[in-house]
Length: 163
Length: 418
Image (cartoon, rainbow over all chains, first blue to last red):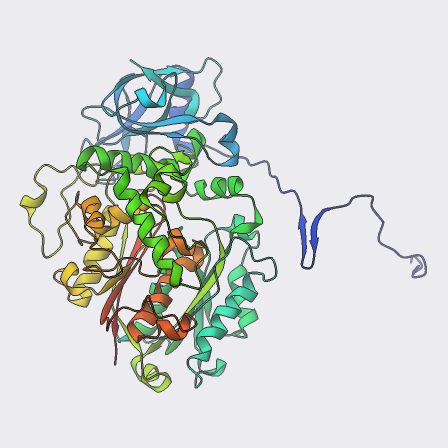
């Protein structure tokens, strides 16, 4: 059995400090970051489609409802959906230009967000519009999809420009 | 269901940052302030609590709800945490209502808080945007002001709503808060000040958007028997309603307009609904609450409304969902002065989120506390003697709490019980 060694017992001292803003009360900064292992699961074919230059939505196998952003089950009747190809040109349903944003996207400001609509498709698709001055964008404008050459497997693998 | 009453409320002053008090301390402060008004209520007579906060990211403390319960001295009684995005506070209130209505409890504490000062505003916007779909929405440029900007663009296109009408909401709510000592951002503004403020997401400008806050609020709810023992001025909760919609605003197929009792199908012959211009969940919540409270025409039967104005645009959209005016007429409604402090139905008479702040988990409870004081006629007592915001003899008020792009919405109707 090992001997106890209380006389020399100590937590190791470390040469790491913290950023301290204030003493009363004590306000300090620490860093918080994680690597997250995410699966697109049943939505994976959508992202794989973007890498092939295809834009995929969903069509209900039972009631025929159509969805511009894919979902594996119908929100109207609950039946399974099948994949459908969306046209690569559509119209702007609404838009905005963001001059501010969350930290992750601050460097990209200003950027323009649009919802794309297609005739006969029951819902819209959120994307970025590129290459247009904010004041020249308008509801009803025809837009066409472009795809990144190097896929990131994110919804921004597709974006839109004026048709 | 048993009748349910609110017997007291308390709130902290909302502020940009409150480093001297952590979330437990802030809730305790709001709790003690409520308890002061019901001296016969002891900890022993409280049956349990509901504690609400929105974001684990802001708090960076899981199970913070039980830490509040513990700090308030309520362990080992029942407690649970409620979370539903921006509507967290309103949902907490309704969950506490259910505890009493079901007969499970006779006195319940509904407390909520948020501590948003722990990250800078940019990071805060990122945290909030995590309450949008993280596969399809967030990565495109996750930013809630951007989502609301797209909604109001369409509202302007469909109905002719103007930026001046949006600005009128900001002017009204900031001005009301000048007499609210709990408000974070009271201000005397002009329409031009709002229009000249920094553009954030076209057409929403800095002064069209609420601020991030630290704060807490508490509502004490009780059964009828306990309510009249504890206070001679209880306020009865006569209607609750809750609605939902698809997480993504892009995912809402057009349906028929859901009609309120005073509306006709002909009012909306050609309206694609909800589109992205209207909150179907808000309409459903209102309809359920009106039915329970026996309200036929909200404009005629409500004395005031405290609603979720995270953006000036959402206040205008919400007038319509609540049926204070027809869909499409929200801009004209605010312009007419109907929502002013001395208007037909004062909306956000205490300043709303725009001027009071929006510490998310506390916000819906803040509305309950202000509505409670209005109905009691005790605004002056609770606002340091300033009763400028006290409405004359209000009998019935409505509170409205709202999440996401209209994903969870609660509407509760409160009436004078004395």
